[in-house]
Length: 374
Ligand SMILES: Cc1cc2nc3c(=O)[nH]c(=O)nc-3n(C[C@H](O)[C@H](O)[C@H](O)COP(=O)(O)OP(=O)(O)OC[C@H]3O[C@@H](n4cnc5c(N)ncnc54)[C@H](O)[C@@H]3O)c2cc1C
Image (cartoon, rainbow, N blue to C red; front, side):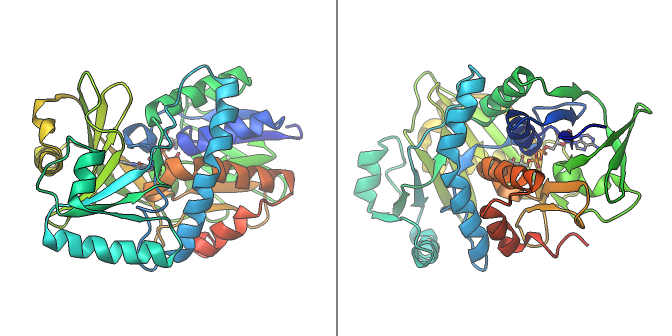
């Protein structure tokens, strides 16, 4: 065991981003994961959406999400320096649309909440929608432009993070952690292969599986899986210029266009434990809702159907903290916003490792990250 040595358990978007920043700051870093570069972040849509993700009663979380969005441009530039992979960071804004009068009433309530939190929102009439996005259904009742909600190509992001970590000599152990234990100065991780690692700093980024790893000493956060189905369709030319989010008969659906003609349609929100089966009914509902907003969906090629498990806490806010002032840190529970919050999470973790807390760690605490891990 040497100084400035970090072991990261979990190579999803959070673990990879933290490892990348740690390695860039001179930490000798090892990632343990059987299948790094995948996890829920592989299924995700890649929306960076602090405004659309603002929910009633979660004002402190929204402040964290806004700080998360502000961290993105610098992070995208830093990552581009280490990896040649284009992550498709598109600051093009998002449009919220309502299908009918009932959906419009709900949209108005959401817009009021967003404005009360000082988030930028511009009202759009049905005519404005048609002008901005001619492929949208002519039957929509109205909408709003969210100029601060953007997107990144999440699978390209994961590929770029793998690439950048390799370029920085991060070690990948294709293994599974089965137990973590720690004292005041060092931590130990037992692996499924029978190997044991001892380290001065251990970072747990297991996403929805955080609560499954055995902790011989100390406490681990309670995180539950929230399943989401998501589809990838394709056309030669993009049908949309911006992300569209809609409410259709009370259900949410979003359509995220990529430059290369891919259209991501998501996502269901299901409490089904660790069930990762693809269910026909959920795929049907997503397609049915999507075609009511964008009729051209019928003509697209369906290229990918997947689902992932969002890591959720009881407060919907992530936990990004050091446990009991010891050698173990945790970054988990990012729920619907792990892609958005990955760069800011890494900054907070690096601040903890270096003993120079990042100002955003106070935002994470206020959003509910403390108090939930016992
Ligand atoms: C359908 C869907 C759509 C989404 N859309 C968005 C979006 O548009 N924008 C956004 O910001 N977020 C989105 N999210 C949420 C986002 O994907 C998650 O918040 C994020 O992936 C959490 O990252 P993570 O690294 O904590 O967990 P994960 O991405 O799940 O990664 C966890 C990693 O830990 C590894 N692991 C688990 N157990 C062990 C073990 N015992 N030992 C070693 N390794 C282990 C796994 O193999 C995995 O690689 C979406 C999620 C879903 C499911």
